[in-house]
Length: 75
Ligand SMILES: [Zn+2]
Image 1 (cartoon, rainbow, N blue to C red):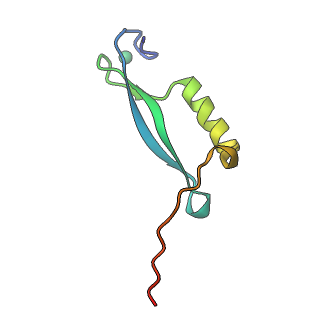
Image 2: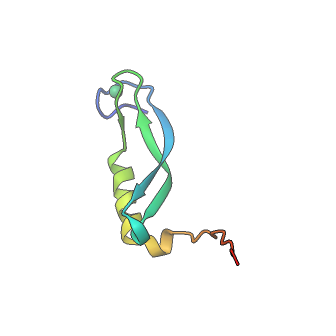
Image 3: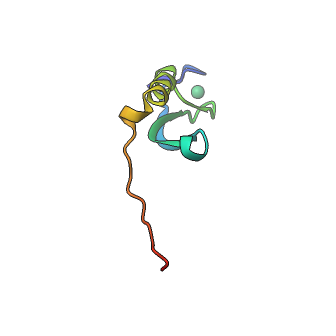
């Protein structure tokens, strides 16, 4: 893969998690591929990735998986 910023080959992809929104609108998107370039030192999300994130945010109810939350009863 070629770096969008400096055009050098050899970028690395690492996956990150990002949180969007707050409170009950909080949405955590995991496994977002972030491009990181060892040549120019830039880390960025590709246009395609940003587009996909927008789509996930718009359709969050069909994308999101409800995870079980542990509930402890005190009494
Ligand atoms: Zn670069």
